[in-house]
Amino acid sequence: MPALVLLGAQWGDEGKGKATDLLGGSVDYVVRYQGGNNAGHTVVVGDQKYALHLLPSGILSPGCTPVIGNGVVVDPSVLLSELSGLNDRGVDTSKLLLSGNAHIITPYNVTVDKVTERFLGKRKIGTTGRGIGPTYADKINRVGIRVQDLYDESILTQKVEAALDVKNQLLTKLYNRRAIAVDQVVEELLGYAEQLRPYVADTVLVLNQALEQDKVVLFEGGQGTLLDIDHGTYPFVTSSNPTAGGACTGTGVGPTKISRVIGILKAYTTRVGAGPFPTELFDEDGEALRRIGGERGVTTGRDRRCGWFDAVIARYATRVNGLTDFFLTKLDVLTGWEQIPVCVAYEIDGKRVEELPYSQSDFHHAKPVYETLPGWSEDITGAKSFADLPKNAQAYVKALEEMSGAPISAIGVGPGRDETIEINSFL
Image 1 (cartoon, helix red, strand yellow):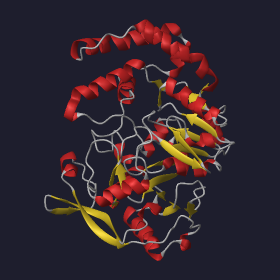
Image 2 (image 1 turned 60 degrees about the vertical axis):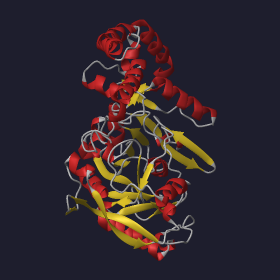
Image 3 (image 1 turned 180 degrees about the vertical axis):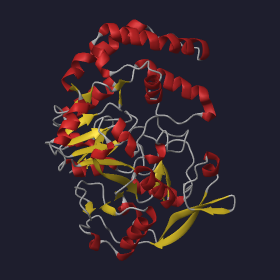
Image 4 (image 1 turned 30 degrees about the horizontal axis):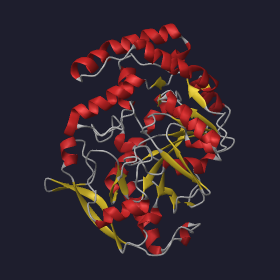
């Protein structure tokens, strides 16, 4: 039962799309297990660049079945638009499966998300404003709308009424906004039902049967470990579990069926949105990383905050996820630096700390403790094996591997599908 989990080991944007796409030709199913269209994966195939949000990266691999699991929150208009865009570019999307238990992002979820962020002002979390958090909140409060509800108008209407009973009070009395009409929401949601029907399935059954038949299933997380609602830099996190445990709850596949957990690790560190970031750079080096690395959010369009590699959070990701392997991406971006600092520990209140502090206050005050490694100037984008890398680049990779606590089994040396060095096979 070869089931693999592939997830971000930092604050997201590590290059998961490329890693998933690389494996897509060797796996039978690629499954998104959490998040929504607040995630963004960029995949480069030849001279074509694809920006994916809700769809699993495996949709670009012929013969692979892409699956949106029950742990994902789905904006139907975004999903249908993304499918249409790929169809227009000649990509076959007919094999997509959508869990009937996945929750729907409704128009009122988007409205609540946006007005709440504005109301919070300087205390805002930095959400994407796409309704993700309010939809997960509805799910937990048991007033959420699921995909299967689109096929029973009576149930759908009752659920929308229940959700809007409270939300309209909030919108009108606290935020001074107009109330949202139940009939209008129901009509819009019902309009998506037939367009989505060909994709809706019992994905829990499908995936477990596939594993029983020795099919290869790859679970693909959105965002990253440090954005996990339980294990991330709370409250500056997403509203779901991108960590490895989320793959089980978000798909209905048990943990004993997972054979490997692969963490995607950028050769430096970035994050989008508010929150602590010990190695963040505010100088020319930070700007160079942003420019050379093309560090702009796929979903948000916002510039990413950039900093040096942080081994403390890499070790944390290894521990929290039980990582068996790392896929190191964007090593080529570091070409040209004479010296490359790496954060090996933090200083907090004058004390050296080598593990991620559980206290939010301590992490906010953490200062990076750096070791400096020699850089390289040679172009590495044509490297096909580890031996092809300059000696200093090899030493950098080996140092990161030792600091992070899991073997680096693949290295991205460019954005293209074929610009990857595979050291150990993931399958």
